[in-house]
Image (cartoon, helix red, strand yellow):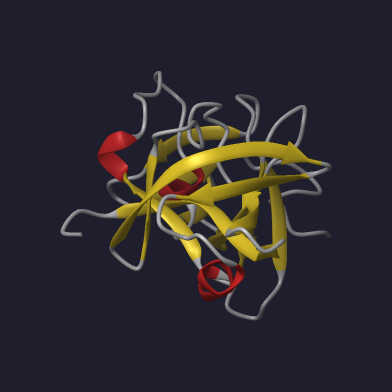
Length: 169
């Protein structure tokens, strides 16, 4: 596939003997795993034949994967879709993959590190900025903290707040 992709799921294991796999879903698009939808594994298109919830997991059967051996071959693989398939976001909204890799800098100019992870929380996401020593700063993704996000430049500016960005005296 020639365009960049994003991960929408991870195959954790084969389930049963008829080709189903258990998926760890990494997409909040409820239609992502609808019957007839397509995802990619290592550039190969897979069409969803059926999908249903099974406890905390999603069980998916891909067209052509008709037995346990075919399902087992998918184990451990990430499921991708092209970035162009993602819906447009509003101003001030970002996909986690756009934030990871950006440098976080306080208004004072002090670097807090590079965003290594986005943690989804019910109230707001937390952006994990990891500095060169391996220290982590959890940055709440809220308007009172975030001053500016420039994903094109890979730079996020945050307010200088005691306990977050200001060094302890």
